[in-house]
Image 1: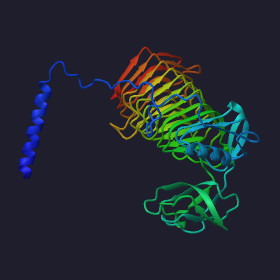
Image 2 (image 1 turned 120 degrees about the horizontal axis):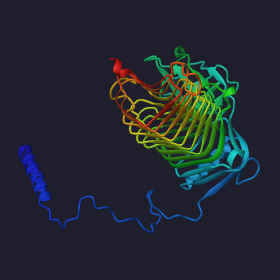
Image 3 (image 1 turned 45 degrees about the horizontal axis):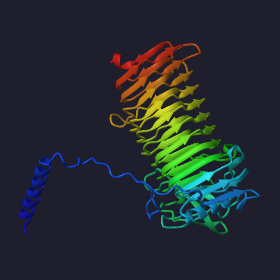
Image 4 (image 1 turned 120 degrees about the vertical axis):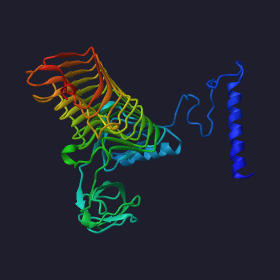
Length: 450
């Protein structure tokens, strides 16, 4: 058949199909008829969506001195997680005790990591930092340290340098797995050039709990301590007390994350993450950091205090819910929304004593980049920023927002503070039933002044 005949045949077939669909009888089932409900499922190989509800799952207990496995650092917890991974999933239960970590605990799919409440504490060991003493190329799997004091085989490390090709930052997370003097083998190849001219360094920096390409993970009932007084900074795109990357169906419940020199809890390109009944406090970075395209996060009944920013919606966070959270004493914004963070509901939160803005919509790069189509309702924002602050500050070209039944309060002198500030280029902002007290003005609508 020629190309022309083939195209004519396909076109005729498509037209016939369309006519057939148009002439379908009323007795034909609609195209949206649901599948039959799944009842009494069996355990079927490869089916992770439906299965029986078992009375007992594989469980390992981990303690300092008692339990199925005993120890005082990350290695014993990792051994339990790896054993659970080999069985296809189960529970690692941490008994009361303290574990001091020189590397992340790397989580697996189908895992419940359950502590015993406040008495289960994971503490990051103090960090050590040194420069690299020799070049390593992108295909190498080793580095040479100028000073190996403070570094051990098994340590988690962060390798950082100025990229020799474009001048940006290079950040690589690896584990030291072998040693000869100051030369250390890494668990994986570098895949980036670390040349001495880019002032590369190695530091024992890592998340306390880390997940990558894992699904169905639950972290419950434990305390994570970043010991920021004795550690260097590692920002939330790479670390935190908890850091998840490319994961899905993650639940973090009744967890205390404290004192990390970076973020408290950060997740990037992770979908259907739930954080509830947690505390995230006294971090140098962000309290909670849903970021980089994460879809449908739920953040509920969580306390965030003493961080740089409280709840930071990062890039492309959509269809999320932040409800019933308490955000206090942040150095800049209490809740911050920006780059393509759309279609989220921020409801019933209390934001108190934010350093610059209670709820901020960032300016970003212009139309199409801002945090549009979000609803902010029934929140209480109290005592925000300096003399020129706004409890709610909408910047850039942000559009199509609804602010409904929020309570905005200023208990200090009004000065030049306002309840809601709408930037010059914002548009389609609905203000409905909000209450403002103690400000110099309820609304500063700068659009009207253009």
